[in-house]
Image 1 (cartoon, rainbow, N blue to C red):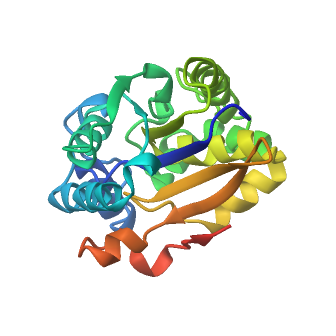
Image 2: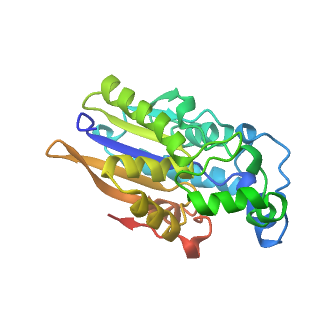
Image 3: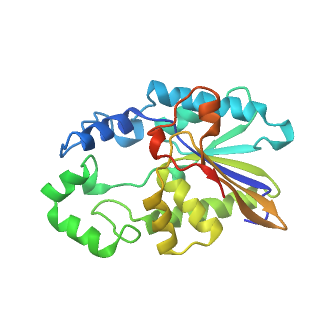
Amino acid sequence: MAELRWLGVVRHGQSTGNVLAQEAEAGGLDVIDIAERDADVPLSDLGRDQAAAVNRWLRELPPDDRPDVAVVSPYLRTRQTAEIALDGTGVRVVYDERLRDRELGVLDLLTARGVEARLPDEAARRRRLGKFYYRPPGGESWTDVLLRIRSLLRDVREEHPGGRVLLVGHEAVVLLVRYLIEGLTESELLGIAHATTMANGSISSWRAEDGVLRAEWFNAVDHLRRYGAAPTRQEDVNAEPV
């Protein structure tokens, strides 16, 4: 990734699916009641406010510091986030399905309680294999997602040499981009994932120094607070420079 001057990743704003999932988990339910397929889940009102805060952050950057291009997941919540966040910035947008969220297969729409209650064998297999390698039937492991993100980053490097690139994606995408750029181990990645609540609308970034991308921000949410868009589950968000 040395050919890029800067790489950033924005997690999409809060979606209606995020809200329903949190309510189902808190209520001890087995199933999350989401009518749409995952690709069609829209932003909530708060999610739109979070995307607008990203827009204000981008507009305040000097023109030479703004991204040259944004590569966006085609899911509705990420498209809506990008449309709001990039409005009036002049940043070119490209959609790429390799940035889509992790596919959960048979676990789709099940809460943690629901997986244990309805698919106990899968729950046991997931515990044995661990989050990094476990692939639910019909779904993807984190290593599967890594394969497509590696491919995407290779193309980004080749197509935008010396460029500033912003990715707009999902929680797993942010964590796995960090894994790849910083050369983390499985245990280091899982430690970060366990300790961090990835905030909707958060910004993570890496800046080139001596030909190498080095961590600048991870899960940053100061722009949300600055512009009146509350970070999701603010009390749990660990947002700081790295």
